[in-house]
Amino acid sequence: MKKAIAVLGSTGSIGVQSLDVAEKSDYSVEAVTAHRDFKRLEEQIRKFKPKYAALSDIAAAAELKLRVKDTSTKVFSGVEGICMCAAETDADTVIDSIVGLAGLRPALAVLESGKTLALANKEALVAGGHLVLDAAKKTGKEILPVDSEHSAIFQCLQGKPSNKALKKIILTASGGPFFGKTRQELKNVTAADALKHPTWDMGAKITIDSASMFNKGLELIEAHFLFGVAPENIDVLVHRESIIHSMVMYDDNSVIAQLGLSDMRIPIQYALTYPERYPSPVGELDLSEIGKLTFYKPDYEVFDCLNICREAITKGGLYPAAVNSANEEANRLFREGKIGFPDLGRLIRTAFDVTPDKKDFTLDDIYETDKAARQAVNNSII
Image 1 (cartoon, one colour):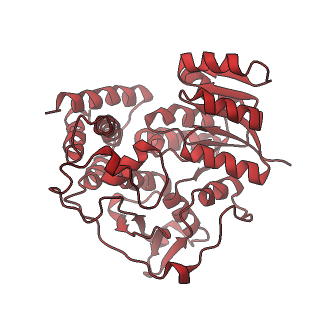
Image 2 (cartoon, rainbow, N blue to C red; image 1 turned 90 degrees about the vertical axis):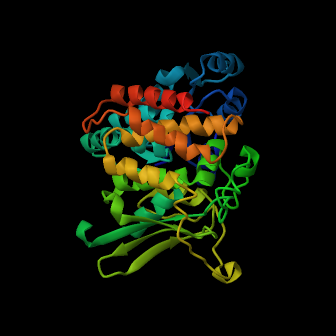
């Protein structure tokens, strides 16, 4: 039977690559969504002929509806329209590649509808925490990781004898474009400098997060929720070649790693075909051509966002949601040239002061915390 998928955030980097995997694997695409890029979404509708499409931007959705009125695709708008595409399609698996906190409600909609969630959105688990895990538990559906690091961990854990056997998780990081720089050297860097990632082709927000290593902090929090591992048992290691995508260490100190070329279509395909493995859309890894693999400890003083995220998940409750929202705001301000790169950590940390200490929280609590954290950032700009 032909596999059916839906792609949320289909015009972004991960979304486009997901559709490439779908095309090569002859999957049917039941729904596509985006924020406001109606031109690219129109192209995808005409190519993949999905049943549904949605744009969260109301005006963009109205324009798209006019452009594709000659097709059979139904166009919806707003967050409700995105969630409808997530829940109401005939897709077996829904890929959530929406960037930021905006991916949380659609992720919950996927799980509550009893579909498999292929998660490429870190913020859903980081901010949603137990709400997302509880939704998955109620329907008995797995959350399949799409991020290269979490896919690597997921693969390394296949066949493990028991949860007790796992000693630690080792997340690898490229180090971004500013590896080895001092805080003084980073004082005058621009968003254009930060967007020059040495390995991965990603969207602007995620690329800036990679430069500050906040992205790795998000992955630490996500790994805690996905794999049930305490934050103190999750290490980060800078690996410039981005060939080892992450590792696990067992109680006998054996380390198992997942290696592959730096191409997101590998973890995307595995999330869609799990537990089977199909021929890859990507070339073979030739280690003799790579030549060497290097590893370094992160500079926690220069890249203070890593410890901010570790502190947030150690505190638990709404703190991960707060620092995530503070980062989204600070990241935007940096991209707009309104703050300097070293300001990111200082501004993100202001979220701790406005976060209620609640272990058991609701979706409304998350959005209230989101507003408070963003306001705290803007109030702290010098």
